[in-house]
Length: 352
Image (cartoon, rainbow, N blue to C red):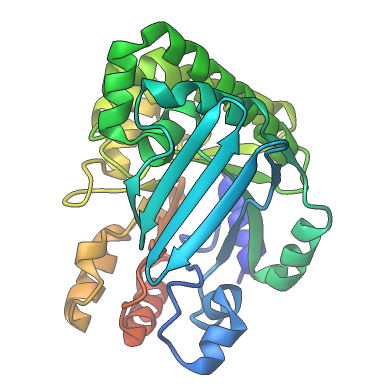
């Protein structure tokens, strides 16, 4: 029987493996309502306890915004952050996981936002990879997470979907320049990530045609992802892109980036793309981290979870470039027993 590390390295080099790897996304919030022992041990230990393969996602860059001052206040569930720059003030309001006010709300915010980006720099966090790799041991590997490319940074975090669309319509030239500036900053992170010992790099895009159009993808994101893949490949890394949204209409454009695989490929009903869809368009060499759709196992009876696992792991799946991914980040209310049902079903169906 392979160790988790052996199984994952075989999967990422497209070599034979003893079973389909199971790489759940488990973060501290996932286990925040479990026993004191499991909370205190942390998500790496929890993943080991349920018997899954550990793909620990790490993206701990050191970030500075000198000479920009950032002030933060918290009240109950609300966080307010204010950036003071020589070009103006930016304000962001977050309640829980929702952004109620973005730092880039209108054309008036563009000078200050551009100043913030121009004065942002990234540097490595020495020794952190080795510390995490020691915790994971032979049960898996550590992959380096990299934040979103320029357009997804704006759409998801800094401007929002509506503001981004209005800004592109009202200030097209300025937005083009801003997007390229953001891309230059992103390339800094990618180069740092590519120099870590991690063999797998994951750019976290959350790509979806519910957020951007195919035209926007081709205009900006496709080229930016291609740059990520090129830098990763120059350092002999595996280039994965996290695309958990509706991407079926983007598959041909995604293929042109040269990526090695898609992380968190999500089928209906949550998204709209199956592994077979991706392999049909991009080819069978594509490595797929396939999501077990959350609606099929979270808060479902045991028989439904087992049935969902059997459908996700049909005979022959072991021989494909597929890793099973049960995403549980940001979901603190998953019944603890559901993990044991998943583990039993994985052992039952993953070696066929």
